[in-house]
Image (cartoon, rainbow, N blue to C red; front, side, top):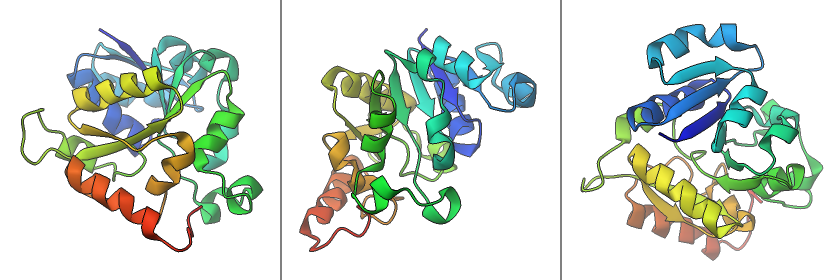
Length: 218
């Protein structure tokens, strides 16, 4: 088994946890409200799920999925995440999270911003551009003709390959779209955000962003 940490036990985190348990991973769930708040979910997931704090999830996971509101992105357990693959499943929503100058004025991609916050971690963008309920509903075996694509981006080749293997094992085709600076192509309002497409179709939609005369999401 491989250990997966998940910080944030909302819809996205819980959906990924369910698939991961089914795929043979052990999962440590981390919530700022503490392990007691995760009791029902952990009981549902079974013996291979452990409730804990964000620090517990970060310490236990070989990879750590972060699925928290972007307003909380600066509050992750920095020390426990050092040396880990941080899978960034977050979306920046200004009306909810408050505006961030680096993202609004400097047009920094959100995951590049996360990498700057956690330089000792290896950030890989994934699972931000899918509706949470589609995660269990759309997972398919590798040979399925209607298998959905999930875009990933990162600056570290080995980490991107590791996350691609996770995406595949959870039931989706990984689509590598490049570095974190390129990950704006799957941010909110991009052609590739919230699409239900096979890998080849997803890749084509993501390429549409390159034809824009301006990049309103950047």
